[in-house]
Length: 458
Image (cartoon, one colour):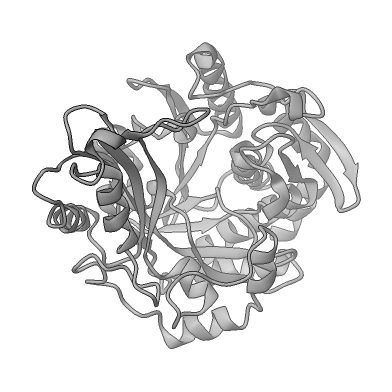
């Protein structure tokens, strides 16, 4: 296959590719709001038709929630599964948008031309980079270089309630040698990245109850137990002075990163002062013996996300509350068992309760961390391909957040994921005036063409 011809076609057809993306962006596929359910379906139908136009055997699959779009294309060599999501976040507050969020526009900015619309970067623009690469390859060669399955979800922005049941029911049709996920970003301006590890997530909500009703602090204060005092005492001991989490067994299974990876991260020149300074901070607050990138990518965390109880309205009320509440989340790394950690955390809290207090729990999900086997030849091919399209050499990086689908692919389908995306930190995903750089869209298409060609020829 002539890669040069494919790249030339992608260059020549950029305007047409942008127009197709605009068609998809005009569909308000907001998955979390039932009012937009017909639009989510309309986006699924649009993508199904687009896949069929490229030559995929495509279908829209109903679920108990929003539909999945699946397309299959036969080919030689390895089988690749591409994942993206076509649903988008709500646009509120609408008053902060400079234009209609679903009326995409190509705008000139001091940093170059950008596509402005909800979903431009997360994730419609990203997934279309892959489809456009497939379209160009098919147009130039009449086929695709390897067997490809495209799997597009319509519920990612609303918690993916149908994803795990769908994977379990349709695993045989989706299982491949490797998954490709395009829902991440560049490491820095001009520096592409492949995410090789993602932290997992555990969410816990607790309610500590003391007296059966709220009490007058003048009548009962000093004698009756105060659940807020109990709660804050326990959570105040969640970390020691060096930033280490104090739950017994919390660090069981946590491994050190390799020397090679540590050296690569050190060479990225991460500006920790600037990273914190952008949000008005100056001092890292995690484990004191770790580098900033370790704290963000390879170390587990425990964070108190919300705490409430008693009277918080206007004025003042001298109440001794019956209940105190908190929400706590843990970002987990490879080797940690989220369900074992849940039991350990609950036992640690419960053991510190005084006699007159009880506790009730509510879980908010548990997903393990993901760590990819970068010895797979596709990772070296992808790194070289990305490095050819951007000024800087592509980096293997970690991800501080969670992309649960990568963990589900590993756990349910038994395959690793290669996460390469082309978003930027200033794309304002989930926020008003979301944008996607036209340059990212263009380079992303070319990068996928290189990656698919390289994998097929390896």
